[in-house]
Every structure is written in C-alpha cells, then in structure tokens.
Length: 452
Image (cartoon, rainbow, N blue to C red; front, side, top):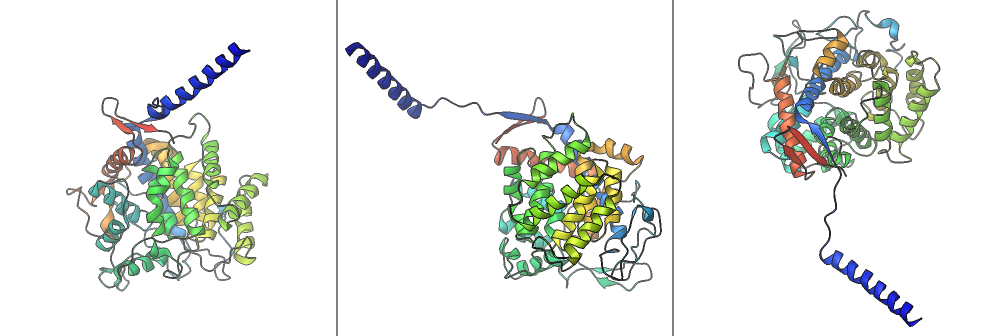
C-alpha cells in the first residue's frame, strides 16, 4: 500500500513538474499552413478585373430599366435578351449600347471606370502606394478627398453627343453623403452612422469592397478585418452584413474545392458566406428565402419565378423586416443578385445574362459575379467562356476619378489589367506578411499562409 501511494505521489509530482516546465518552456506548436502560387493568382486577378468590367458594362445597359413600379412593369424575361434596350426610370437610354446583349471593349479602347470598379481601384491603389495591409480611417478620408471629385469641383460631362454638359462626380446615395461628411472632417465609420448618413442602407458598400476578399486569400477573418472601415464608410446593419457576405465569398475562392463543378463551388461559397449573416437579420432571411425558392423550383431555367416572388414578398408585401424604399436599397438588390448567382449555376455567361435581366440596379450583381467568376476562371477562361479574343487590356480610371499616375503613357487609359493584377499581388504580399504573419517564398513564388 505504501509503495502504491509513493508511486502515485511521484506520478502526480511528475505531471505537475512537466506542466510547469511546459508553461516555462513551451514546445512550439506546428501551425497548419497552405500555399498559393503568386503567378496563378495574378492570372486570376486579371480574370477578376476583366469579368467585372464585362459584367459592369453589360449590366449598365438595363440599369434601373425595371424597378417594379407601374411605369416600369412588366419585368424583363429571357425573351428580352437581344431586344432593344428600354429607357431607365429617369427617362434616358445608355449611350454605349442600344440592345440588351453582352458588351465587350476591344483593344485600343480602355474599359471605362464606373462606380462598380473605380472605388475598388482607389482602395487597391491606396494599399499599394501607402504600402500597408490595412487602411486607417485617416488614410481612407484622405484618399476619398484626393481621388473623388466633389459636386462642385467635378468636370463637365456629356452623356450623349447632343446633350448639354453638366457637372458629374459619379457618386450616388451613401457614397455621396459619406464624401460630404468627410469634407466636413468626419472619419469612417462615423460616415455610415444613421444619425449622420440617412443613406446607410443603400447598395453602395456592396459594389466597392468585394476586392478585400481577394487581398486576404483563404482568410475571412483577415479579409473582414481589413474591409471593416471601407465597408463602414458607407454601410450599417443589413447593408454592412451583405457587403461582408460578398467579401467572404471572394476570400474563399482561394480554398474552395476545385475538383467539384463550378455550380457546386459557387453554392458552397454562398453557403459559407451566408453563415456570416446574423441570425434574425433581414439579410439572413432574404438569403434563406431565395436559396430555398431556387432549390424548390423544379424548373431551374425559370429564374423569373424567383425574381417575381422577390418582388411580391419584399417590394410589395414588406416581409422579413424589410420595407422597400428605393431601387438602390441594399436588400432588394441582394435578393436579385442571389437569383443570378443560384440560377447561373457557375456559368459566367448565364449568370451575367440573368443578372442583366433581373431588374433594379442590374449592373451591381453583374459586376460582382463577373468579378468572382472571372477570378475563378482566369483571363483565358473568361475569354473562352464568351468566345472572345482581342478584348481591351486597359482601364480608364480618370473617366470618373482623379489624381492617379498614368501607368500606360503610350495607350489610352491610365493602367492595364495586367498592371492592376500585378499591383494587387504586391498588396497581397503585404497582407500576408503584415496581417497574416505568413511569408512570401521567393524561390517557389508562393505565399505561405497560416490557417486560422
């Protein structure tokens, strides 16, 4: 008995001493990591910018044509593809196309900046020029005031050859209010507080912050952290959570199983991102409604059925805590965006076609999904999907914004898509090292990223 007690005592003392030693001299724990090719990522980023521009300028053809008011009904359907474009709700046609069809810009003419791409370009440039993986509120404010015109210092713009020139700073809704507040000295995220910005529930953040998901490949925690202030510049509550949904989707494209179909990949991405939406929120309810309506629809080509159900449930019946106010609302456009994502089933051509016809602020979902699917496909994949070659490689940021260096002095526009993709890769370098505490392996040209 005494021997047993001694043995037990020694064993306890040994365990206590071992625990004490581990505390004093901890054994380094091996952290799981994953690797991503910088070369392949740059090609994917090219695909992102190419797909986003195709989606943006295709969706612009029908932007605000069909917003569910008596004057704009009935909504577009598949039968309207290839037909003449109708006037937007403000009574004008777009200047770049007269039919509802895919829009492509050819070599020699740059892709024009628009609000679905230009603020993302600005944020990317700020990260790159300031050599930081995370922008401060002061840096965001200074960047906005330097690169975005006000309503008084913007140049004259002629929408049509025979139209009267007018001042245009290409800011709308919450973006416009946020800039005005910044000019008064206010910093993000105060610029999106409801007491300061009555437009905080508009669509703005959805179309200006997706790129932060691509700057932190595979790490939603880091992506959401570096996107927090840019999203908080213009969005609060459901509009904020919806923007975060898109950031997470873009972030996880780097780690989605590439062995499954694009349909399965996009649905997995959406499901993962939807878990970020707070339970009980309108955004979460909208996601569940659209996802279930798609799943329960036996006719997967009849996307119009779900779009019409969204119109009835949200614009007319004000369900799930949402009260429709404007066709720029974040919520109604989130619902429309999900229609094109689910029914597009990973096919970039079909996704952009549905997004263009779905209604409301149609260039937003098309730019978003054009960018995400373009990233997944890469440059060549985008060209092959649309059966196109000789597409423009340059970008005209000064169409809408100002004070950026000209990186393509011998070409129209201020940068090339190749140059933008390279700039983004260099920003990811900074994010990997500074925010993720990972490494850039120069020998293999790969990022070594610690898993969360």
